[in-house]
Amino acid sequence: MELDEVSALLHSEPLQLETGYERLPSGVLHVAVRTDMHRCLGEMFEWWFRWRCDTQKYVWWHPADHVSSVWEGSLSDDTHVGSEHVVTERLTALPAEDLVIQFRDPSEFFEAKEYESARREQRVSCAVLGRVGFGHEPHRGPSGEVLGGRLLHVGRDTEWGLAMRSHFYLGQDLPATGATPAEVEEAVPTELAGELLQHCYNEFTYLSRFLPSLFIAEHRDTRPPKIPW
Image (cartoon, rainbow, N blue to C red; front, side, top):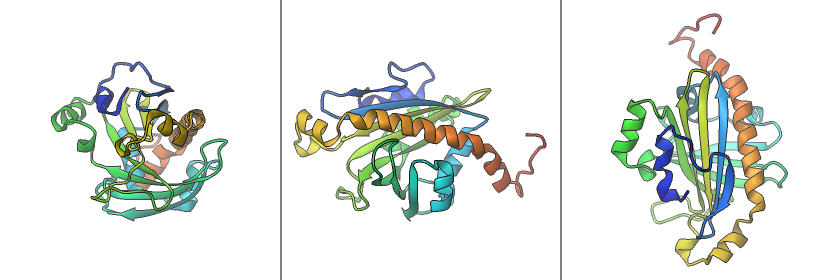
């Protein structure tokens, strides 16, 4: 699935690639991860990225892989869009890597009316979308957009919890610079795919274990919890 085909994520039908990876003709590495986040809701997932965990809480999230966390960019309480998550993390067995995740508006990835329809019809309950750059000073475009890769976390509420689909496009901007498929493949080796897949699955499985309780606790003054929940 190419990046310009990700509107398929706005529908509940199974994708051809739900969990796995593929090398696209351009050399870009596409990694897909499906995670069932029991007892979670899309509202909780989006709130987590707006809460902006510090390093301590980032390590709570994934004790094995997460190293450090700070936030930059636009830090509105109302949206995660515009914020930048500056992290150091391991991808399972690989050495720790410095990354910047720049959260972007859904309109960068989806046609606006189609996205609004998917939210209204509850085919999508959350979307955390962004650009990924390697290093803490990644390459940027003329408008400050981070260059390197893309990530999409698109979830749907079900009777048991949140069905989360995560898709990564590593090396997405390299073909635009004139890099050949072989050069893109060299820059983003296939070994990244399996380690990222495992990391993402573990990361959101761990998060699902405490996110409902944390969300309820942080909102108890405005939304008194029902016991038991």
